[in-house]
Amino acid sequence: MEIDFKKEAEKLGDDLIKDLTTLINIDSVRDDEHKTTDFPLGPGPAKALNQVLAFGARDGFITKNVENMAGHIEYGSGDEILGILGHVDVVPAGEGWNTDPFNATIKDGKIYGRGSSDDKGPSLAAYYGLKLIKDLKLPVSKKVRFIFGTDEESNWEGINKYLEVEQTPDYGFSPDAEFPLINGEKGIVTFKITFNQSNEQKVIIKSFKSGIRVNMVPQTASVILDVNNIDANKVREEFSTFVSKNQLSGDIIAKNDDLTLVLNGKGSHAMDPSKGINAATYLASFINTLELNEKESNYFSFINNKLHLDFIGEKLGINFSHDIMGPLSSSPDIYDYDANKDASTILVNVRYPEGKSDQDLVSLIQNTLPSMATVQVDGHAQPPHFVSADDKLVKTLVETYRDYYDDNSEPITIGGGTYGRILDRGVAFGGMFPGRENVMHQPNEYIIIEDLLLLIAIYADAIYRLIK
Ligand code: ZN
Ligand code: ZN
Image (cartoon, rainbow, N blue to C red; front, top):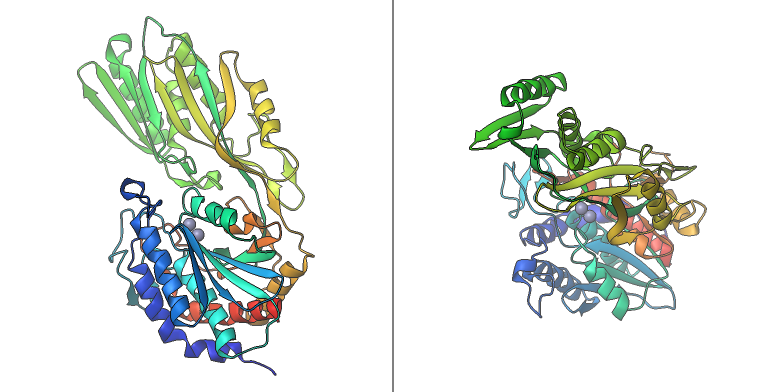
């Protein structure tokens, strides 16, 4: 029996749009401030989870809620489990929206709203793909679990709780990236470099701060100088020259004994640091031209010499590349220097291919540090993940995609992390088509309705090929 998945998918468009609207209208940003024992990740993510599980129950699926942190919708039976891994949480709305980010708005064939493309839209399209298989009563021989996490955008506690409690699927995909398919995800690790230095008599730099998130190139940086120990007019002049020479923008604020310099760069995701303008390393390169004391000089010359404009960790001694997975990337994103503190820190976010461990990288960085500085892994590190392009899962998904979309490009490796990496045979598959504007995490996030319908067809066909 030949099934026209595209034609069948089009019939489900209105229902999908209705459900997607319901889901977008739930603000599901992880909310630790309002967490309770019932809602360990905050009420919003749990509400969104319960909503998708309610869609599943309404449509006749078995559903399971794992402690309001994750859950699944189940279909079919068999020893093997295909996992489909989506997430119902979203990143904060941020500034710059033309519509209410938590009130889905349809305009010009698009649905606008936070989560429309990451990941509520693609996840629901994949769910509708599964529903299509069920509605058409297609014969299947394996079990499917559509698993929803509720804090993919932060710590993955939900999905990790799920894996503690429930059986790990044998293989699977996450509809939370782009086509054709992501079979390689670089290791993700943050290194904390600490300079241990005692205070000095003559302070030029009172403090230097930059960065809000370890996975984002800092957009602004600021330094407070002590006007008693500098030629303030000269510094102002030199800073203005520096700012215009580098085609940046900045501010100079004088107050009492403080001269504050603010430099504006351009934020970007840490997995692609060359796309941003790191305000901190630029400002540090300017500070490094001042007459600094030894403590200051150790910190700022290090940033200038070992971090500034180096996106592949070459000067840190950690650059290496993998034939298929590509090069390591390095993004120094959070800075804390205070004249009154003995320890000043820099957090460097690194994405690396297979071939070295995070501890190998620690040793290499340590070799480039001055004697008063140390380096360690900060927080939770994730090793690199790779599934061969010859794996049947990869081949099946790519073949399905190619049957619907004229694109013969090969699977790719990314510097980001998706739920695909939680399974040994896990990949990310769609939902962004080539050439589409990447609006994930951006203001005015949207998904094109026509793309959503095509997604239902591709996911339905792909799931069916994997479980029939
Ligand atoms: Zn996502
Ligand atoms: Zn995201």
